[in-house]
Image 1 (cartoon, rainbow, N blue to C red):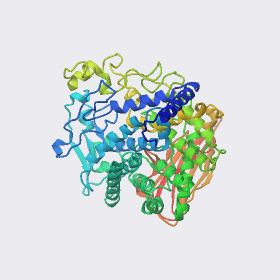
Image 2 (image 1 turned 60 degrees about the vertical axis):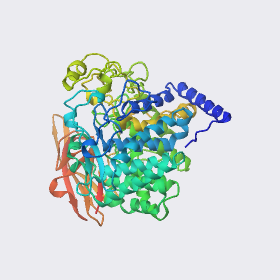
Image 3 (image 1 turned 30 degrees about the vertical axis):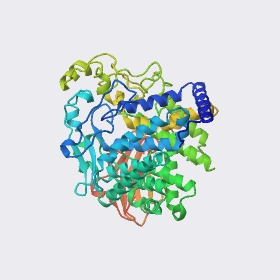
Image 4 (image 1 turned 90 degrees about the horizontal axis):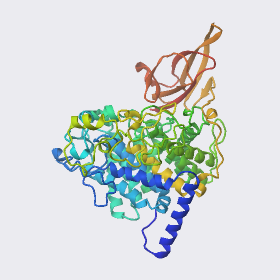
Length: 620
């Protein structure tokens, strides 16, 4: 991380770096430095609390100045998560973790673009709040406001009349996922401030250690304690990933062997070595943990735990291969080439995956690891980075609609963003009070562009066919969120600082090839075996159909719990499994698979078998 300096030679050097970075970005067709600047402005628009004198987003004013008062605690500050006025702790903590990681990896490039101080200020705005939200070692406030009541109102945050009740986790009402993610955020942020603000860094680390101990000792999902969060930020992946995530960040921040040992010894029980998934976001952290563990291994820091970290690394490379289209279970892409998971806020997964791919490619290059071995061929670091660039360029406007999904960037971007503050006239322009229903009647339903530009916001984005409707009530596509933008900070800094904007890298194969997967009838996993067999075949109207039976067998010496299976390229009906957030799960009466036991399911479809793989599990 760069230090602040006032010397003439340093100033000249920084100016030269800024010129080179700007020229590189412009040469590639996009001004990544400008996109980075706008991204950081977005976080200022999301601020809650008393705004500072140097606030650059001037259409916002102070808000939430009595947050926590009814609970006897000061909870002023922090960030609103998206287009509403609630402060949700889990996505806010993930946002701060990813902003911090961006700075730790690409702080020099941010400094060259003149944005390092703004990025550090964005992190500190979050961590200052987390310090307040953690008033006792075993108490953490995880939400201010209520999504249900908030969603009945359309008000500027400066006018809020909705509930500002605060909700917490404690030993009687645990929240290991919330506390673990907040511990990760504060550990990562402690490294951001280690050189420039060591006292503050030590304070963050103290809070982080306490939160990790609390999360590990009193285990439970936070949405079982803060039930009002369940419909908005439910903990689908559980808390195992956050415990491992926190341990990884604490090892990175302290180098204390305890945290590395925790990561290694709990990989099976908490899912770190069992989950192979191609999504990374505010709920599921397994790919992030796996990339960090792979980093420790590649840097020669694994020590006696090299074997365990190698298993983490295998799953990290599953993620990489799946994203770049060379895996056994590839992420689908739209016709325009962007990764596609779901209609509602798909771009959150594009930005987070782009960050993990970028850092993994850089780790592989710096350590001399070279290519990632994938089922469909090696993925060279330059290929991975070129793919990342294609995803970022898609977001910035290189797509079939020629639409920038970053608000304020380019000429054609969303004008009716689903955002309370941006869609209502600024309180600084018209301080007249706007009530809940007046906001809906006069502003939400108004067929006009927002009066305030939410610069730098990454909206939810297009559907699977690259279609997008710029309408305020289309919240699945036009609402932005802090966790969409946070991972992109590092990627934009990396692209802005790259020589030639990565243009020297060769292009990738066509998109159609990236969506093909191999579908072996018999697939062996380290602990689970998948076997597919045709049990019946028949023809109807010159089309041949097959009934497939699939058997998944536990070949380990431990009990498998939390088994999740992925099934793709399925054209017919499936029975014997239940649909879940991350794939399919066995029926309720078979949630535990003892050694040697199997779970069976079936499906019917024409042609070759569907692609079936293990998404995740825990060994108990």
